[in-house]
Length: 396
Image 1 (cartoon, helix red, strand yellow):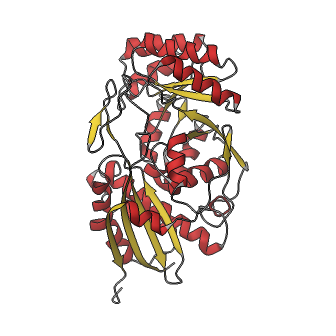
Image 2 (cartoon, rainbow, N blue to C red):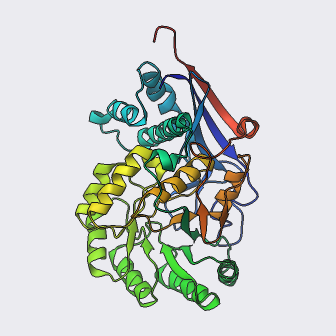
Image 3 (cartoon, rainbow, N blue to C red):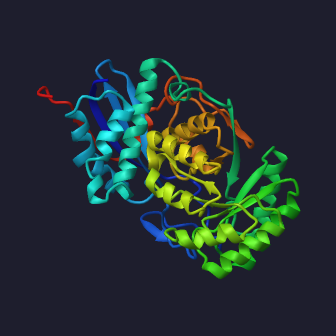
């Protein structure tokens, strides 16, 4: 595989509906910049921001990759521009796995298997896998060894309405259209979160309900929420404690009758191994736009060895990461379902020549070569806020 050029696109898309919807008071997020949305600690953007990587080989075949970079995508782009891409273009590339091993080690001994370095590597790895499968003329799922399912079950992620009755009505609408599971964005206090669950279950009694606590709770409140959710037969409780608290999550898993889901903040096999060996997660949630395809396969294998199911995370990433997540969910026997963010998927489809085949219960696996998507270059150019192009030098 001879890589001739790599283009990095920092993209920001303004959409009619912000990620996670309006604030709880009904107001819309600001038009520009970043803000917190209490009680959640994290910073959010009013736009859909991401980093796209476009890799071209000497035959003109193009592969696309993407990093989960919802805030500050320019930082991820800088890692790609200054370190990863120059190293890739200066080295013969046998394929995605070899490239991954080489690029991972560039900053490994300095503690950079995580954070923006990992996100940048994930985007490049995804693009190389897309290119590899396109060169073979097969879908990514075939290049990865073949599917165990042709249709990927999903859960609806979020009910972006500011009022509880509107959230319940939206849940009922999803249920009547064929959805089987919905995840609520919690962390607003145990009583508030439980009231949301009760409202949704009343409006849509056949709908399974999960709660994402957004890392908001301490041990006592998390245990109480887990206990009450178990009594309501909830599907799972995601991210209940601080994201670095392995021991706290271990205790919660041991003392709860509900599945505890963790993983979107983790990037590599060693992190997941530590959590899985400690029995600190009951459902592993790697995000392919943070792990890359190569590492996601390893993580899933480690989870399987610990008898822990997988549900790939997906949030504000667009078409390349969405397609990669669907393909991986199709080849991983331990994958239960995939996260379906409706607004994000709408934005993702705006950049492709054809929509994803989907309904509220699941996605069909894209059937074309590679990721199975055709990216509209005009869309990328229109929404690009920063771009850089790297070419292999004659000397290399």
